[in-house]
Image 1: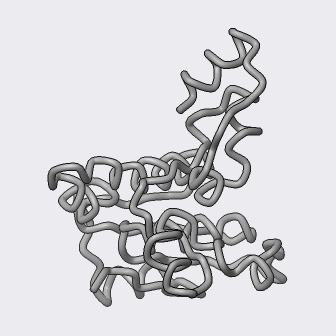
Image 2 (image 1 turned 180 degrees about the horizontal axis):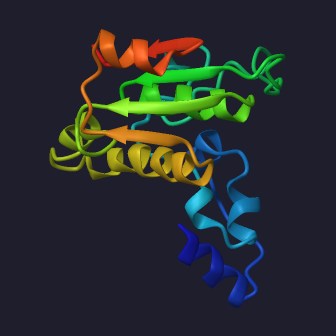
Length: 177
């Protein structure tokens, strides 16, 4: 993506076409122009937005960007009235997104993941032929977790003892289906 963008700028092209990439990240052009390709939430080309939703006359959604279709409800993140200690159990996409949003709202967040890395189930899904772009979900969320300095405890299976010693104000269980 970015190399094409910079090649267009270098050759003074005046037209760039971005379709579903703008659904996944409406700030795609701004981030690219500012030289921040790692901040772009890339479209994984799953066609969930158009193929599965719009053609079925349903509101658009995006597997990569949960805000799509909820803009009127989630148009702006409001700061938390009171900072809370949040424990997120599960380092998959739901847990990472919950941690990201809670942090952006001003909470003190720690993710606990029983595996040795975040997003392991998605990595398994991405191993199938032609599904490698599914890794982009984990890559972007992991980048955001690092950028926001969210604490992560890997290789720790959570039990009641860990929860009691952590003493969270809020416990989010995002351990998958």
